[in-house]
Image 1 (cartoon, rainbow, N blue to C red):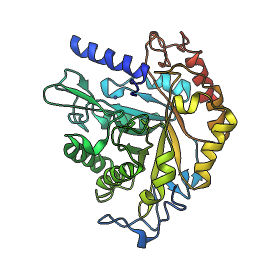
Image 2: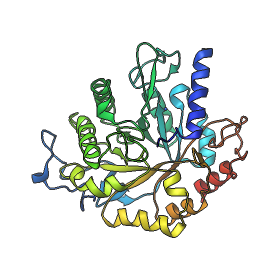
Image 3: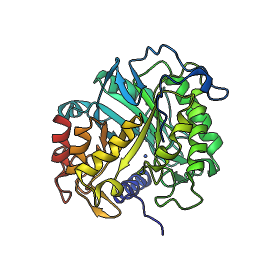
Image 4: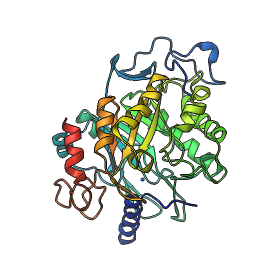
Length: 358
């Protein structure tokens, strides 16, 4: 049994391709990991961390205090959007879609990739987010070959990909560039592994891959920024984190788990049940956020109110999919003219705007 791509994302991907044709158990104490648990061949765990953002005892901290951010996923790599409008919505954190990791410019000028899409430099995007007091999350969503063939990461086993070695080199380049910019957090992979734990998946594979991808970044000397680690089952499940998180976190620091809220969080659930799942992770000192929540997926239109109430109650950082002007996309927060998109989507635009401003 296989699951199709997120319906909204599938539509988004088709739209991007069309535009191109015309010209995205836990360790008990994390940040204070004992030096004798040091991961092999990695720089030492800082004993007195001084960064403004960090993970301590399973809590996301800003300047030493627990913090909850609310934000969105955005497509600024294809063209920097209206940050004044983001300010009006009170967006605090932005997860940036990298749809062509191989060619994505880190700094300098915009380029046209092998598949025809124009790509704007990550540093320019970060600078604009920073000017508007927003944290930036950088996440690789896809790889584009020289032929123009695009492979989206969703549902894939990372280390099984033919481009995995090249992926690791590019991610190290990104980490090296942003190592002195602590308001830039880097996610290792978007939504890995089969949605139903098929295609050779195991929690042991999750652990092996996450160790390798995290350590690849941490071997960049001076890179102490937060690293985001996805769950299994296309990022929706916390089961791998609960099973193997302890082994991943041993000797590592500033790791923040990223879960995505679609079917496994929005169907046949309740506010109380969601709070219990979040609290189970927090009780075991697992720092987490929800890097995506959308109102529609391959199972159809879903209700989000109970979930949003639960993350507010537990003070859990949460980001919507998707900050985009597109009246025909139910997951787009904005309509074609930049107003709340409430078309055939349970008033998703207005619902998430209220969440942001609460």
